[in-house]
Length: 170
Image 1: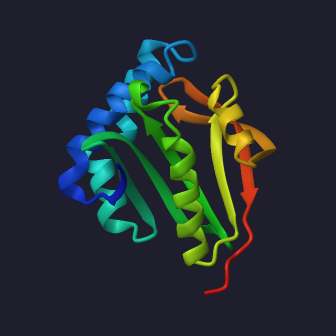
Image 2: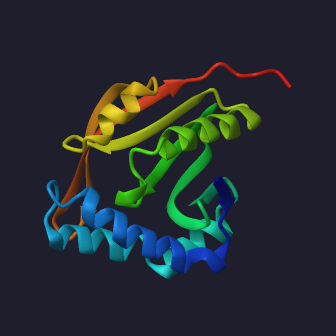
Image 3: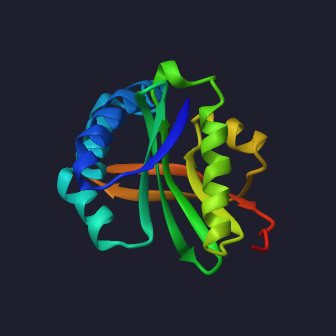
């Protein structure tokens, strides 16, 4: 059974553990181990996650539970731009890939965006990450690209993708 559970600060250790496990696999062919460690220590520091969860009301973390196990998470930011939800993170453990969970997470995110009257979802994906093809199969298209300085001499070299959704009238 699949569940999406909103995460509060008590779930930070679960998010950190899932990030460690999923990132090492997702980026091992794309980024150096040093850059992966740098990004994990900055993006998933307890203080960073606490700030996002408690101080940013439109920044939401969800845990993905499948068959009573935490297998992934995602983070979205409602109203990132006018009528736009940003998908900041979507990660699954390697064993949870290929089960349709990512696709169901995207549909769930679309429903949340719809509930908040956002008709566009955007995300960044590394130019060398095969996840780009996953997003394309779900209707996302590339609208731009960018290189973003993240400090310590590292950059994120990303495609910017979007999906326009038809809002459902309640």
